[in-house]
Amino acid sequence: MDVPGQPILDIRAVSKRFGGVEALKGVSLQLHPGDVVALAGDNGAGKSTLTKIISGVYPADGGEIRLDGKPVHFATPEAARRAGIETIYQDLALADNLSIGANIFLGREPMRRVLGVLPVLDRKAMAAAAKETMARLDFHVDRLQAPVGRFSGGQRQAVAIGRAIYWNARVILMDEPTAALGVPEQRKVLALIRGLKKEGRGVIFISHNLQDIFAVSDRIVVLRRGSLAGERRTRDTSHDEVVKLMIGG
Amino acid sequence: MSGHTPVQVLTPQTSGRSPSRWLASIAGMRAWLFLLLLLAVFESWARISYGASFVLSAHNAQSIAVFAVAPLLLALGETFVIIAGGIDLSVGFIMGLSAVVAAQGANLAASVVPEFPAMLAGIAAGLLVSLVPGLVNGALISRLKVPPFIGTLGMYGVARGAAFLLAAGTTVPVANGWFAALGNARVAGFPVVVVIAAVFVLLMHYMLSQTRFGQHTYAVGASEQAALRAGIGVGRHTRRLYLLSALCAGLGGVLYTARFTAGAAQAGEPLLLDSIAAVVIGGASLFGGSGTIFGTVAGSLVIAVIQYGLVFIDVEPFWQFVAVGVVIIISVLVDQTQRRLGGDG
Image 1: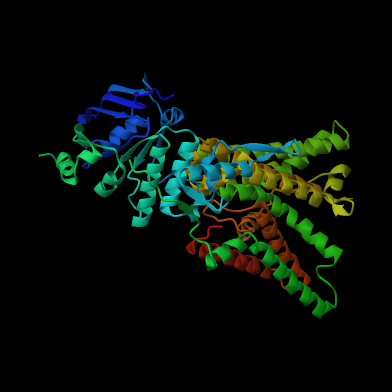
Image 2: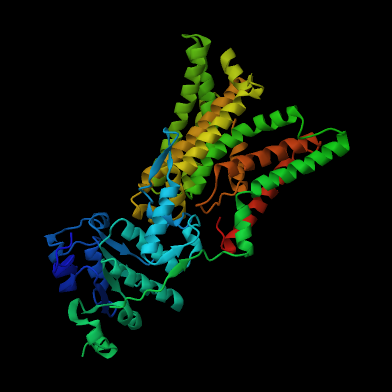
């Protein structure tokens, strides 16, 4: 799949307008395998609009999105997900009363046959896949049948990401993944993002937290009033510069 | 870039010897524990007052089982609906409607065919008619977004009126030996209705715990968003749930007609609350997301034992209502306490 040097996701001069408001004025962004890109910007800068266009929630008015070099148009979030672009929203969309495995397989449960006739849910296969998938993210699960509602916020984030990678999501969009979490939990989520990088997935995450942005991203893309205010390699920039790009001046 | 990733261990937060875990682990069992307690109370009472056993009397055991069948059948369908976060208030009169139509269907068919196929026609008519309110409930709730409480309350009235209109305000007797046998005969010492209910319990348990349909029922009850996100057709699932609930009530109605050789519009009237109570006592949460079939079986038996047991020890029958009401309230309180402590078993 991955052609060397070719980005997984190539966003070219995408624009979007809501009535008279130009929410996005020709923004471009490239994402390679193993890239972690932080999307920064003030409120109303167009971060959410951009991620919603990528994940199929809104159609773009202008510009082009290429996935593996081929132009794509997602009519729905499901279409984007099928193509390998997964969005992890803050509410995580997990069924709290079901196990990790059941959540990973929700809607696509594996079945087995008892005595060759009676089809039943294959809980063993689900638990095994859950264990293996979470281990890939360096999370080791010791109670596979426990409902995910009993896990902490960061751990539940890991389950949502685990589900995405199990189904081969190659681009993972995360909206404020560390908001509403305590400090130890934030660290876990950052570790998760590093895990995704190690797996060769592309990650785009929206964050207001400069600490987090500098801790895990390779590149920082700053939007301001719908335009690209600047793109920097994280190791070559500073908090000050990013803040200046965000507020302008 | 950074190669170092700390190893994380995913451990449920409520582990160790916290009281919530202990509570959660008995959640599934609490209805059975309560049933044992009740049986112990009635047993001691029987020994002291009458010098006889309550539990070990075959007559008592059978009466309780037969007594529990109708509310249990309603409760089985209601279990699915409640786990999915809904409620079906129309089951009592769907049962009545189905009982009346089963009786009329069997009578009508008897004028052209022998008794056995006439009984089958009656059963088919009773089950088929129950699908109509089930379909309407599902469409109201999933397509028109009517809250389940209101939609099925409306259907409660419609089914009630339809049943009484069809029965012309009276009961509809059935003169069919086969039908009477279905309701009153025994196989290997067990009443046929109890055997049918037992088979149905196993079927429902299989559906809830071992199939995608059951799994999706839990998911819808926990979070509709999560279910939608997973590609589950929540609307279609909801329509199936209310259809299933109505069908269970229909079977209850058919068995009522068999047992009493007459269909009555008010057959299920007192059973609606008993069936919802059985589900709640059995450990399901009215907030959706949890519950089991065997919990509901235990809940139904608790109610049947209270009702039969109070008659057995000669308490005025009106106390039954008080006792069942108190048990419902206690069950809901236990459920809430469990939720507050974080173990949503």
